[in-house]
Image 1 (tube, rainbow, N blue to C red):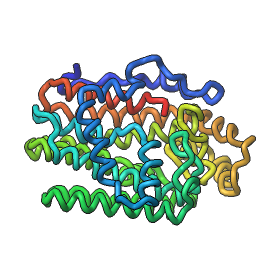
Image 2: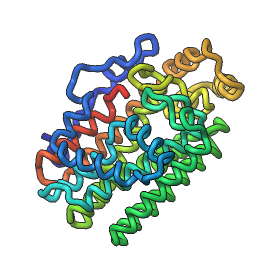
Image 3: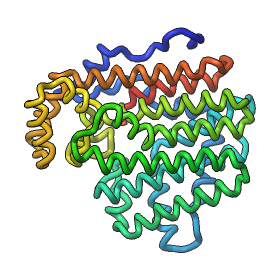
Length: 357
């Protein structure tokens, strides 16, 4: 059990460096940490209620829309954001109520809508091991369906009749849009700096993690100070989650990921491991790497980029940032009493930086 003021024990940098080996893809430790369902078991009944509420929020009675919904629900992800909302909604000592379930649904609607739009923009063929929505229903239907999900999220938010909800979600939507715009404007120019990258993933990814935790805390009636600590926990967790995603894209397993690796490099996007390596390399070598990425990486050149990252320790430096951020997430829970739910939130932090997909 983590004690206040003590460092959180996370996987060591040395062990992670061994795992991130391009010649032997990320190893998948046989540990309960790799199974999110282990940590969802305490709220399994609430998750069942969430899935019912999520589907009900989407169903329209129109055959075309409901066909898309059926496909989307079938290819649904792990549900880590609604899990966070429901867990944080349990910190007050009682099960998540209907308002908390609605918050979990709103968070997931926002998340899935952004994924659908991302897949359209990125021309993604696969998502979670399945053909993406645009690949299945074409771009026009996908864009409109993403808009439909955003409209449903707004409607549910208004139903809550809570100005704090509106404050949280309007700020989150603004941040997510800003993160997408920053990525479009800067990362593909291949001059994204580390502070800009951290700001971008904070807005694109961490904002919604933070909102999920914050809304869960609000619905459980926690004091304002504790709600703010949950907001920080979610923010830090989301940052660690995205850095690990970026590492998986370079060093993960295609089968486990459910999509091809190297998507970021192929789309000419800089992520933290490459940014770290470029900052340490000679300027002439950095220019050559950027030129290769700018003109479009050929399959046989991918491992040249991977070797460049490893030579300049971009992978291990990114792991250090990820571990430090995850540790800060755990420490943000120090003010909460020791409970099973708090322990699960801390354990989830380790899951986030050790998962294989």
